[in-house]
Image 1 (spheres, protein in one colour):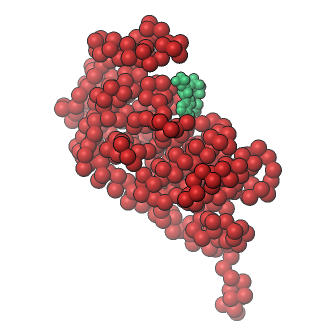
Image 2: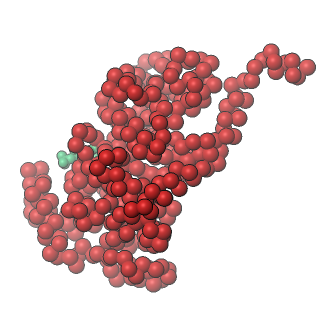
Length: 360
Ligand code: ACO
């Protein structure tokens, strides 16, 4: 009787989704293994702006030992030496630079910053003062080619840490705004979330820029994006600022990137659940496979979504991957783990290797 019942009532949406959830739960490290192996083929010099911190030093030791990168450590030498001794780290052949002690270099960098920003109101006095800040000093090392990538942000909030890089490195030619992406690893496939870190309330046109940047970054990770622009509505079911903005962004993105698989605006479960899409929105080009790339309407939603997944979803989140910078800069999230830092260094190295062609 049960079997005939099942035949009459084909598998319910929830049952199908439950099966799919089972397939997703668990972490597949293929993507990060591929990136790490790629980094090892040609390790690059990575400057760590916050090296007077155990987690950064431990991550530096790991990337050095595994030949992922050659670290340059910025910070107070005595403090770094004390942490190394206390924690038995082996970093004897790493370059350690204390910007406070590097008077000549600081002056050279201050002059360069002043030349860059004197018509943005920066005085030479302020430029000299700013160069004492390791985020300015580190960004200038990247700018002048003394390092291939910059990693910062472990102990200070993101918005303060990113500013020196925005001012010194800036955006890549042809790009309007930088944006941040997180990669959520799952057993089934990786998922990509943007913008999770930079643009507070992007307009529809800015969302189109973010869509373009994210498509390129997803392809950087050898994955073809299937994108959904998220909202609290499905395909115009509700009118409002967020739904309308999403729908407009999708319309414009389809025109600007005709090869990109993108749809929306839609709710997050619609995007992730192909059964739901097939049943209720069969016209959507995502109906076959569902989305693997989610574009959020605001920073609030993107930032909250990945953090919840990280804390209670059992997912491993890789990032934040900063997209659209002229050179590889990645700003860690406050309190990142050693594993997260190592992952970001590997990504920064591969980004630096591909600097002239397949860039993030
Ligand atoms: N892309 C590229 N350049 C930018 C961007 C952007 N998205 N935003 C600002 N800039 C540039 C400006 O053009 C300007 O350049 P200029 O001085 O050469 O003309 C420079 O950066 C500074 O601009 P401001 O207007 O002074 O900076 P703003 O106040 O817009 O701040 C910032 C920029 C810091 C990125 C801001 O948008 C912000 O705070 N965003 C949110 C960051 C955040 O808190 N994220 C959440 C936490 S992150 C996490 O959880 C890991």
